[in-house]
Image (tube, rainbow, N blue to C red; front, side):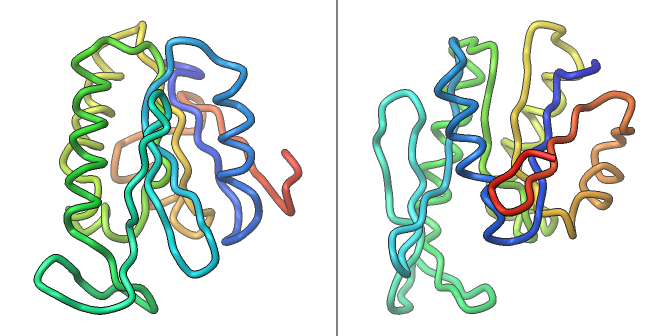
Amino acid sequence: MKDRIKIITGPIRSGKTTYLKKLISSLDNIEGIIQITDGEKRFFVDISSGDQIELTSQSSDLDTFNMGNFIFKNSAFNWAKEKLETSLKKGYKIIAIDEFGLLEFRGEGLEPIFSEIINQIKLNAELQLLVVVRETLLQDFLKKFNLNEKEIKIEKIINNINQ
């Protein structure tokens, strides 16, 4: 399974998504979602189509929930999960996910499709995953999915530099 799961990690605002975007641009047969920030707003972006949906909201309503300083839209997570499910069903060889975080550890956010993708990678030697995981969550991520550092490749990003 070596290199079938590549984890891009680093501190908040270190350039993990920027690195992932550069990596994606050099690969074929890749699908998934990335998160971009525009000012105070965050968006999910579908890699293949470029379609995007705002992930954050400026006010609370029936479609939102609070996490930290952010108000997130449930509908945006549902949209992203559908995109990831479609990626898996269509047989893309590489799936990219930006990012696995606290929500997913709680079984929310991009779950349960994220766990399904990990399970499929363990079963299918042709499938690869590129995933962003904040460095403070990396060891918990490895433990959650029973991954050891011999099975994966970790790219640590510090100030937009690959370490």
